[in-house]
Image (cartoon, rainbow, N blue to C red; front, top):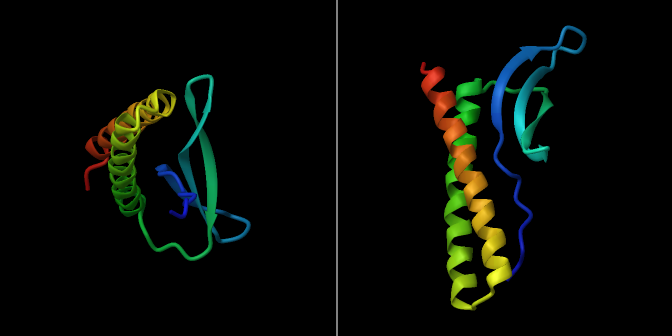
Length: 112
């Protein structure tokens, strides 16, 4: 089986147009952590017609798919009695479910 290197979901927080280059700048929370806090980053986009709400909907779908796949992987590790890998995947699922809660909070606050 070929191992994929997926791009982890991002929670977009804001967007603005750069005054110097006419590029759209999105601020988002990444999947990197510093002292248990997600890292806020910026992404430049040349031709992005999507709103933050639309981008977050796409990322939310990606997150749900990611959690679903992790749960399948968890079942496989449980079946194989690979306890170390099982614990790692469990902690990953917990982090992703917390991130899903962040998305849900964002959607509640930013209803269109």
